[in-house]
Every structure is written in C-alpha cells, then in structure tokens.
Length: 328
Length: 274
Image 1 (spheres, each protein chain N blue to C red):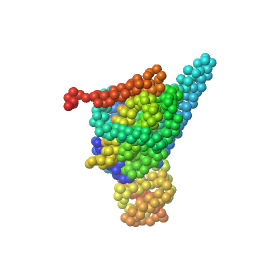
Image 2: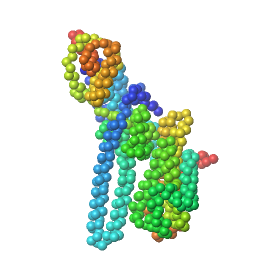
Image 3: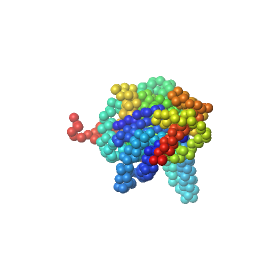
C-alpha cells in the first residue's frame, strides 16, 4: 500500500481537528438551519472554511492520498453549499402574487394566447363534429363516452353532480385538474409535443361533451353545470399550458443557446407561472364541490358567479402589479 | 454563475471563489433507483397507516352516531370528508413527499439519505425552492411510461446522469459518501507477500501513483469482470513504461504500489538518523 508522504502525514495530523470542527459546524447548520448556529457558530464557519479550503489546495499540491483529498473535499462541498447561495431576494408570497406573478404572465402573453387558441379551436371543432355526426362521439371522447351513455336524458347530467358528496367531488375534480395543468406544464420538456397533446385532449373533452349535450337539447344544462367552476379552471389550465409551450418553444428554437440551456432558462420562469395557479385551482375546486351541485342557487346565477370569478381572475392578471411609470 | 467542469466520466470540478477546486461525483442511475425504491416503500407504509386511521375514524363515527340516531346525516358527512381527505392525500402525497423532504432536508429524501445521495444545484450550492419545485413537477414526465424510463434514458445521454427534471431545474444528484481515509485502510487487505526488488526503484509519476492507489482502494467495489478488465488495462499501460514482473495484473499493481512504499520507507530510514 502507498503510505502518505511525511509532509502529508504531518499536515493531516496538524489540521485534522480543524476539519472535524468544520464538519460538526456544517452538520449543525444543515440540520437546524444557518440561523440557529448563533454568532459564534457563524464565526467558526467563516473562519474555518477558507482555512480548510487552503488545506485542500495544499493536499492537492502535495499529491496526498486520494481518500484524504476526498474526505476534505466532502466537508468543503457541504460547507460551500451553506455559505454560498444562488443570489436570490427573499421575495414574499404576497409580493409574488401582487406584482411578480401578473407581470410574468403578461410578459409571456403570446404563449398563453397560443395555448388558448389550441384549446378553443379543438373544442370548437369537437363541438361541431359531435353535433353534426353523433356517431363520432366515441372517437372524440374516447373512453369518456361510456359515462355519456344514458346521460342524454334530461336531468341525468346534473344528477351526476348530486350523487357524490360535495367534499369527495370537490377533491376528485380538483386533483384531476391540477394534474392536467401541471402535466401540461411538465410535458413542455417533450419539445412542447406533450403539452399540445394535453391541451388537445382537454379541449376535445369539453367540445365533445358540449356538442353531445347540445345535440340532445341539453346545451343549457351543460353550460350551467360546467361554468360555475369550469370558467376559472379552464383559464388556469390554459395558462399552465402556456407555461408548457414556453418551455417547448425554447427547446425547439433555442436561438444562440444550447437546447439544454434553453430548457433550463425557460423552466425558471415557467415553473413560477405554473406554481401561481394553485390558489385558482383551490377556488375552482371549492366551487365545483359546493356551488355547482347546490340546489338553493339558480343555475344561471351559478354560471354567472363562475364567469364573474374568471373575469376577476383575468382582470387581476392584466391589471395587477402595473406601476404608473410603466404604463405606456 | 460558475458551471462545474467535467474532469472525467465520473467527476465534476467546481472552482470556488477561494480558487480551490471542489469535486462532485454524480450519482449513478442504479443508486438513484434504489433511493426511490426506499422512498416508495416509505410512502406505501405511510399510506397504509393513513388508510387505517381514517378507516378507524370512519367506523368509530358510525358506531357512536348510530346510537344517537344521527347516522344518516352526521355519519355520511364524516365519511365523505374522510374520503375527500384520502383522495387528496393519495393524489398529492407522492408529489408533496419529494417536494417537502427536498425542501427541508437540503435536497435529500429518506431514500437519498439512506444511500448518501443529495440533490444540489449545478453551481454547487443548495437548491432554491424554485429548483426543488421544477425538478419534482417534471418528475411525472420522467416517470413515463413507467418506472422512470424517460428519466433513465435522459440520464444515459447526460454527462451528470441528469433526468429531464434535473435539466429543467439545473440540478444534479451527487454522491456524498462518508469516506474516512483511516477506515479505508482496514477494508483493504494486501495478502500477497511481495518480493519487490525488481521493481522497487521504479519512478512512478504522481498521476500513476494516484491511479494505482485509486484502483487498489476501490477494487472491492467492482464486479469481478470489470475489476479484471480495469486492472489489465492499467497494468498494460504501466508495464509498457516501467517493465517488471508479476503473475497477474493486480499483483503487478500491488508490487508497483509496494515498491513506492518501499522507496518512501527507505527515504524515511535515511532521514531518521539526522
């Protein structure tokens, strides 16, 4: 076996307590957070880190045993992570929602518009396809038409929303829609193909159902049942789809960046767009569970509430966070 | 931002503001999959407990309310809320599991911790909340069509075994092995009594010495085939430069190493009298 050089051995013997101490301090900082270290602990960390970094450089210069270098390297990598952080402002959640978020969505309006157009065009096509040729229902809706069968009877559609208890329905639909939205975002990494697919399927479902119900003369019931929660929910899915398209477009046309770099840069903004939708989904899910199936409110009033909520949401996205100077 | 430079197929090197280079070793797909298996087992266990508790609460509420003739109204309400809670927990439990653990355990989940892995930002710092969110939202895509096939393929084409979520977030999973150099010498068993005269005075370069040391210290971790192959490759190169004799490749490397030690020992004995 290769024994360490005498100089290395001396260095190890002399400096090992410092390494162990730094290890202890860093472990504490990681476990309880740097704030809990206290002034003394932080002093230790700041004093020890450069010294141990110098030790590592010396060990490398002395060509020390690989294992020693790795040991010190390991302690230092963890200390490095504690001392240096990626530059970030400690942005508050309130600030995020009052200014950062609406500004971000406005800056990326092209993708949101594209996402909306895909959804709207597919939904319209599905609507008329099903209305004119009722036999394509199963093609458009896939497995969902099983649910549809028998649903053509008046009242059956609404019945579906009455059968399940509110909390159950609310959580079922909310989870499903959050899934759809976040998957539409995440599938942006497939160069946007997956996002377009998700938006297409979602649009086809909506248009297909509306076409099928309109064909049976139940169009009114359909929309008063869907709109109370759906107006906000569909808005949120469209925006999440826009975030996915943004990643997909960045990867397809990265410009001077490498595709991986484009993926990363677009993702940083896109994930914020997707994350900011969570409150909208919670509101929509609550409406879906409690407002949509309610007997006490007239169907048209429910639909009006839904549309109003969505309008407020879009108004917020368009107007919030504008400063007077930036208005031009 | 300083991006790490890859120095060989298994290591990243990052230069800190102190001009000291730190090394990161990206974790392989195998150990990462083991980590996720542990996480799954844990999630399954927690899920089972949740089902049992909520089920018990349900039964309990039925038992108490039926005697009070409140069964229909109250019992159904409790049942529907517990069911709603269960749906939420199962739909988002896995997402929140990774999200919360990686946020509060500095890039580790219990599975990663068990295997001494950690997800970090690719500039060597700890992840920002946005990075944690990104890599875990894209997780569903990496999982497709089943068991992380997409993520695994992406990792094959990535220099640091990054799945799509890692690329999007700018993160990587690194090994954080506790490697004490004293413990290591116990694990190493040098069995061959060496007759070293013929190669005792070979002058090895520093890089060669490191190469041999690294191989000898880690050969127990290798599969037999890989170990023989690697020993053969290294020995061939060294033999071309230094010559010498040995029965097989590993013995040759051991002798070279011992020869260096012999040289150091003789240096030391020369120094002692002074």
